[in-house]
Image (cartoon, rainbow, N blue to C red; front, side, top):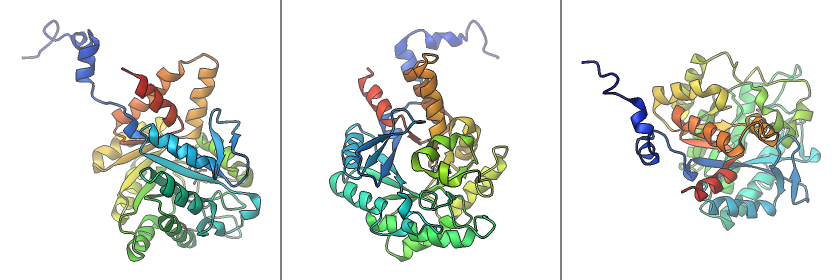
Length: 333
Ligand code: PBG
């Protein structure tokens, strides 16, 4: 028998708030959130970022306060991104694996002051190179894969040694997850987790981030299309994820988030592994700008985007809204 109207009334389960709560399929909690934080080598405590209203570049001492605040809000982890001074940038980005460099220093300090906060570090060379590419370049400006992987392994090891529990290669080189996994195993870091930016698209939504870390200027008119994915491709994302998992990734990430929810859903269905999404800087900027104009309700639209990530199959969410959302969730009955 086909059960149909009026024995089936879909609106019956929408009549009261209590029943909506009981039948809700996806839920968003503080435990889903990760706060990205920009750390600068400059002295100034906190510097505004024009295209990311409300987000600041914080210095080495202020980041500890930030980390404490994030932890006390119930957010499980922080993702660190460095803003490197011109004098520490080079063609081969060697300061990326300096054990006394900015990120290892900050990781050690956070581990000491906020020991239970998870730390995710970005493994890629773009903040450290004078050309703004994620890897090493040849004379034609082409990003060379295998030499870059060697550099990324050094960078990942240096983060693990400093105490980062999760290293996150965001560079999209081939074979880097396997190389990093081998190095972590052989150097005594078997429990360091790899969060692989497996399906990272060559997206125009990264622009405010590049403004924040300074790679907008160094990258100039160049692009990252020889390693980041073509936005037209979906099957390719499945291949990328499959390879990263085989090479030893613990968690895979899709980035950006909202324009790629089909990928999130397919990856979750196909592999049944932990999947994270990154609601990137351009997605943040877009929502904030509309809310500032009163064209959209900030809290309502932000929460709607985040629940859509959960519904699609995301486990963890990197978003610049994390702290704000954690406060909203705490105040919600
Ligand atoms: C670079 C990196 C980027 C982001 C995270 N890591 C930008 C890029 O690939 O140019 C973007 C994050 C965002 O836009 O919020 N390794």
